[in-house]
Length: 285
Ligand code: PAF
Image 1 (cartoon, rainbow, N blue to C red):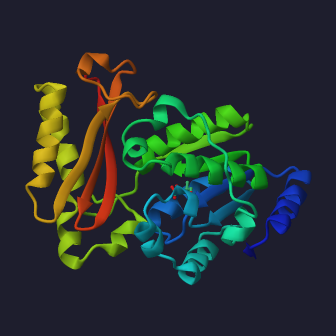
Image 2 (image 1 turned 30 degrees about the vertical axis):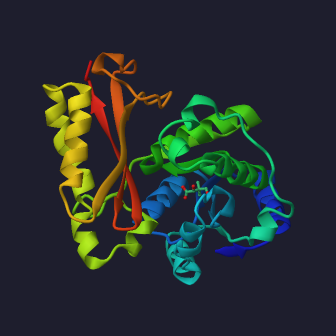
């Protein structure tokens, strides 16, 4: 595995591979890698000839200085995992390398970015669009892989791709879970042992709500999920919305689910750790 830190070297390496007809898959990450990331890498390996994984904690997508400062950074362990997973290139740039000048671009991300994470974390999705567009420009991948835990992020990235006219496939990959159901996340390492025991209630509440949804209104289902999660110590739901999977707009009735399914998206604090998860409600209308 090549560890590349300079954009210039990365461009050259990828250009050489492409010149010999290789298909390139990119897995963008912020490091602190876990089995969820490795599942993206495995898929990328199956579908491409060359796999690039970027490891970069992108400052422009953090709207909270403490969150950026405490975001886990585990470069050595990350490299070992990537090497073991058979990655060709680990791209680990500095902030100056990615942003030689401040990025002042403001993307017109529209309605998909206006709600939920977009409303709670002003500027977050613009920062994601900035860094992902830079990575796409540097790597020019044929395919890029993202986890469905960040369901809204994928919609935002698709919108950015449309705006910038990138010619690539966005591949969304299922959420990976711990055996007790907790969605894998780099932030899980910041939970205390006691919080870690409680946190799976997020997924449990979502799962239980699938049966509940069959004979309850959408609003009742939302209230059910929120009260289930909040009934546990350390837990506090920030929002729970059931949305259209394409527009991300919150629905107020199951019959509004135009795509035959709706997605419930939750953000909840477990102590000071902000966790997100989601679930699909199929055939609800
Ligand atoms: O999902 C993430 O880890 C990040 O938002 C991403 C896509 C790597 C951009 O920094």
